[in-house]
Length: 178
Image (cartoon, rainbow, N blue to C red; front, top):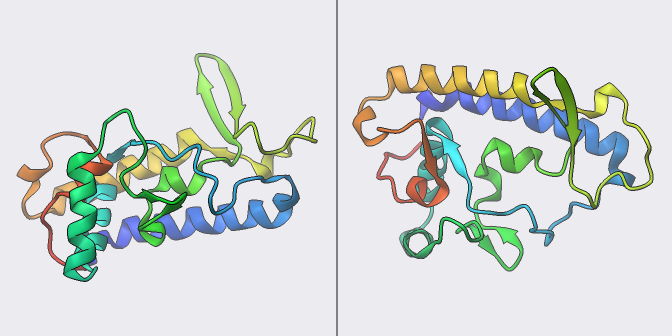
């Protein structure tokens, strides 16, 4: 889906940043396949939801049907409906927040800047260099821009009435293949 090009470009940049941080600080990262403490049922930007829906539509019918069945049964307070045996069923298509979970995230609250990361990570470090931190405000600004451009061009934006949607809602969207 050509309309997802900007989103996929942003995902590629986020993945490169995360690979760089993991390459440099990998010995301080506990996040691995099977570690699913962060895998909650979250909300997504619309462009992320459409990207997930498109990924489901690329699957064989039976597998796509099982994912949609899980989405219908998902609790908004429970684990992500894509979580199975500690792994993401659609790992390659996971949203940006899932790509950055566990990594050091810089946020601004009021006049204060805070760095947060998974408590299992960076246990033996008293400080982190700036190149190890993802600026969440900057990332969200880019994602908001990509989302706005996407929605402006989306042919049927009535199905995306809200600014955000849950993973389950995204998995149940009927969109064309990529």
